[in-house]
Image 1 (tube, helix red, strand yellow):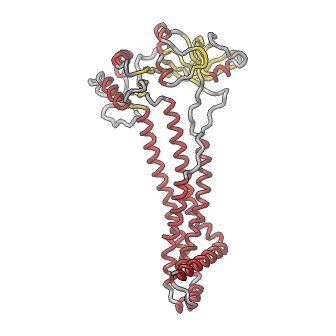
Image 2 (image 1 turned 180 degrees about the horizontal axis):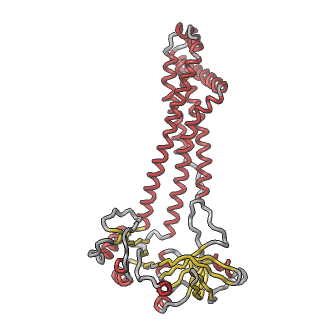
Length: 430
């Protein structure tokens, strides 16, 4: 038993030496053979790594919106609720979520909700102070917007109920706007600014400054400080008066108290608002929590990652077929060598081991290069998303192990063909 084990180890060492000599003598052929394995392994690792970074990015962005928030939005009737609404058909004022609905909802569920956020975006504009300027997006908000969207006030205050009731021309601006407009005198509270909205100039008094939080972009790179566009918050009643907008909302955000069952309360919220839409033939209301939306997004991204990884895995099969093809060519080229070895007493197992080892070395070398390439690409891609990641050890181990399995699987047939050659016929082969 000891002798048999010792013979196998000796044959294995000889096979490894012979395999490396064969690869070294045909470097370009070996590299082209490895290419499919390299691309397959590298793609899988890079995709999984970037997918983890993308999931973290989405999770972070949505968590800023509040884990206890519920998005209440209009949607077309008889549509599947996916958490993302695409409205079709014309809307009239009576279709919108009204202030009366919101007021009654707030009273009925006052023990369960912290705030209700209302907002309306008018469009892009520009604020000027001498030669200095700042780009803004004009947004009307209510008191609850600050709570639901985690607005961090650095100085002054946010919009209050009295501002809404009396339609005050007051504004809460970002620290970036202050830096651009008042670089020499950052204490801007009480100052008046003129806002140009497509030629219509309005004057507002600054009552607060908030901390700007940059949104996540596809490349992780935002606009320059000078050209940056930030929100300027004003009372929503003031904005509606200036723009003559219809009163009502396509969507609102409800910020619930921490001890509330979000799923159950989302259902109660949806039922409450839909009681107003029973006779509406086109629209209804959906209520979905941010936590549910995050789960949906992560599930979709997970499915996409798996699908793309499977597609990338096809190249592994192609690479395996390439290994089989090259090994068959190698068997043909070395037919006389195989015949001589068998004539000198080499057993079938020894010949099989030689060719399987060669196939495994080719595939595992390709796998190792693929792991390094995938890790580098994954790190670069995840860094661009703002969440640098290295591949998990589990996926690296599985990928490398799979590359070795590919070598054994696709190397077995050529190895078996070489082992079953008759010595006399092999020696006569030209």
